[in-house]
Image (cartoon, rainbow, N blue to C red; front, top):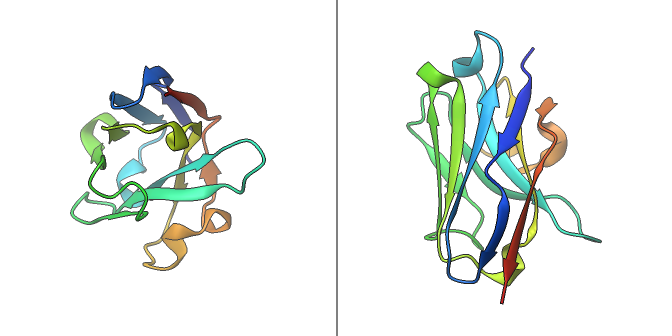
Length: 126
């Protein structure tokens, strides 16, 4: 089992940057595929990015490709989401999540993750 805590959200102007962090408890962080999802008011939770256990492979939603970078430091039990060139449509609560197995298709589906953080608000003003 793993417990997740996000941090780093805030208010930023369009074109600005933020870096989100997701800290994990437990000794098995490096066995989990990790993902970032977001949910705007009145909308479904959507996939943002995911990263394989070793950090060697990463995957992005088309809407953030080229602007966001996902990474992880297994020695620190932490995952990151560097967000550059932020847009008002990136405004949402951002969640980190963990799943114990790797799947190219499942990693994009929020219901296929077992563990979730509490979320951190990101607001981008125009």
